[in-house]
Image 1 (cartoon, rainbow, N blue to C red):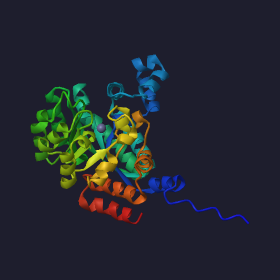
Image 2: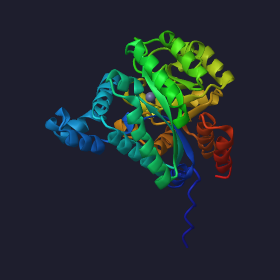
Image 3: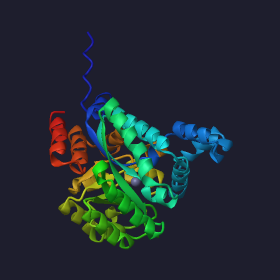
Image 4: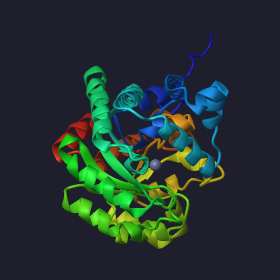
Length: 346
Ligand SMILES: [Zn+2]
């Protein structure tokens, strides 16, 4: 008589994958432009008969194989150059939200590179109308809700940052909830943006900053002290400064962790070297996000699976990461509470 086969452990791959898929999640660090997949970029290039179209489909696929920060920035720029009309923005917004909904993302705070739009001398409001149309259709079709963070670019002329803040302030009643900064930390320090963030804050916008992604912990300190950032994007280099880890843990300023992104842009040499586990165990408020999922070939569920497989996050810890994602959001408390109640029963 054969013995009955053992039932799979709750943490076996056959059990953990559906567990992660079913967790309601909030996506708080995702760039709309970095969500444009290769097929969509090719579609836009074909419509526009752009130089990329002339190079052929293989050139599009090559763009999505980034392994360095500079190559990533180049790819991001090429995607941006293909975003020209409100219809383009409607299309990419709808598709991004469709993919997120398939990951059981229930709420997304999506970053829009308005600094790049300003630099390209595009009119923001008509393009944002396209974004809104895409988001409305996605909410109707997939029951996913989205709000927006307007991102300024650190290394572009500062007037661009002011225009980003003014645009965001004009659109707060249309779902724009925050202002952020991204781009080259070394050439665009937080000091440059203090007055801009203050202006935005006075108009009801929340403050986020990419910091400590490609340079040291001093950039995170500046984001906290000068910009009064309410969330830190990446925060990778905090690991090099114990005092900063303690400060983040004590203040509970949320840190948006993007595991694969940090590997693909060269911030870490191997995924196992990411400080996620240290941060979590030290009491920092961390949550998982994808950054630029199409460019990095990831989705949110695969990032949660990495946390389990590489860093040993148990079901309860994965659930806590999902809880953190809603707590760190800029949703009103009553709406946060709805999701947190749902998670408590998961
Ligand atoms: Zn980012």
